[in-house]
Image 1 (tube, protein in one colour):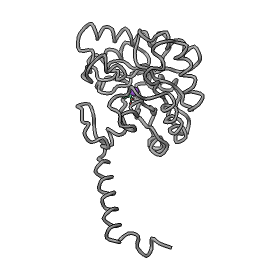
Image 2 (cartoon, helix red, strand yellow):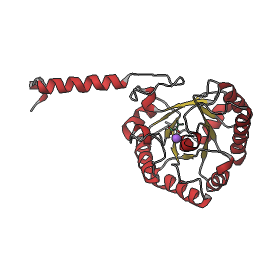
Image 3 (cartoon, helix red, strand yellow):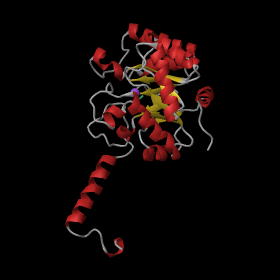
Length: 265
Ligand code: KIV
Ligand code: NA
């Protein structure tokens, strides 16, 4: 299958084709997601939550993100693989940001990086873009700033924040980002942003006016059972399927039903 490129995603927006994106963190699941026909796979720093069990994304290290991205890249033939830059590896200093992005690209084989923020980190974004590394922006609810916001509530509900978000989106387009994630903002604002830029917007909790959608795999597969925000659609109840399967295995071992004649040598 022909590889999806950042150019292709921009073309898809121009043609009005919606973009499907999902997170993945390991080889086996990335392979299944790719074979199902996903356009883009995000190696999200949500790995902190769903893979490592941390309450926030802040502890994720560059080495850990590179490890997850390496695993995903080995499983993917077609989808574009985008890797999150973790907290602390790009905000302070644009040279350090470039070095972090170069490590991700060199060591993992991911094809683009994603960074949270607009004007505040534009120097880092520009320096990374200058090195030929595609950058996906991320505006609205930016989980790496949870300690500043104090909650995971909907963002940009007031005019000032909405205006800043539109300006940030235009700035990201102007410097050459290839797409922007819009997380947990009013649908009407996301539609307006999507109409204001020619690069695709990928929404999560941002309504149907975005050019594509992204979800966290564990959330949409029902593995992350306690998490059920309004924006989430559950496509499977894998949590229950796994619990039932594991429970049956335990029962069969205890009762000596497993293994039977045909399951031994
Ligand atoms: O880390 C992640 O999974 C993300 C998506 C929610 C956009 O950044
Ligand atoms: Na993320």
